[in-house]
Image 1 (cartoon, rainbow, N blue to C red):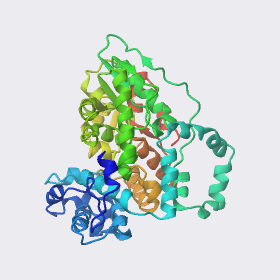
Image 2: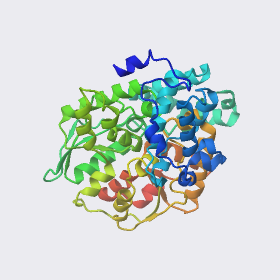
Image 3: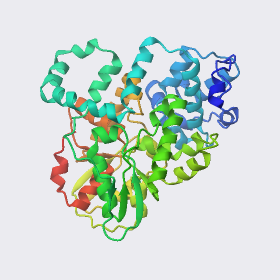
Image 4: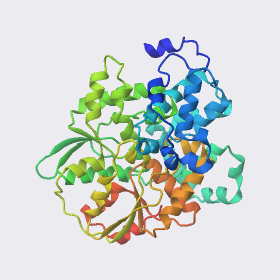
Length: 448
């Protein structure tokens, strides 16, 4: 009801309407100390105050006070933000920048008329990526495009230069289309005595382009004594919508997800995509004003865990075989900053005999993926990706590990552009390989 009323609210002098504008109380928490500057990706690129967290917060305050309008300059600075939340972990004052930027972006989507080019680009993205059924239908033409040699020809002849930037970015990020894989059953019994009944989130991009990650996740859970439940009617969690300011669509997806996993009656929900995990843990905040879902959302959020959190809390049951690998671990932003999941993945990897985890310089800086950022802001995303790849390659690893499908796509693309393709795997794939006894050489030889 509140959202419907917001549609009729007249925007104030700064262009914000009365439905959940950025909170002045939260804005007041920022003392403009500058600790956020060293970890902000856009400030690192441009050294521009208005493209730092404290600068954007100041702009929000000015808009609320009617000193700046909700016009293209203001919107551009907000759109430049990756939403990586590195400022959350670097802020000594505990400023909730995530709440501020999400509220501001929702205001922008309601009250700022985007250009036709922007509208078409965003429509294309949101009609495909949060829809795994539509993504899956693209696999057949994608395989033909890649295996016929057409992709190689298109990239060499320069025809891509004729396409809009977001389409060029989309093409560069396309992974090798996976081979047809059998669908995971709805119930996988635990090995040995059951310890937990765990629901598995399949994700959108994850289930289509990285089915091997979901399969590995399920095998690891089963090997550690978890019964795995995979509801077939699960859809998108709404993370992309939240980050892009599409509030109503995000609320709809959140309600559907709660309904789905309530029917499954699970003890916990395992999530192997950092952005999805961050969003689902925040359902209690997202739905706090919904009388039907508020309490249910709070209960739901307490059951949501990254896969590394779940496995890390269980005493190891399955033996780990040696993996003689030098692994550079990349911190996905929505794991380390939004969920504070940093030590668990490293601890799990270090339990594998023979495996060495090496730390990456500028670990707090985003790789440039950031939801749809590398599609709507391809140039800065490309710069950040190249910067991250240089830091990774400096370590001479055998494998790069990360906990988010967007990061996998971004880093694999960046490695190819650098002329240094190497395996970029999900953290759980390495854990699965150790449990299954897969040879280290087979992982080294995987194509990125």
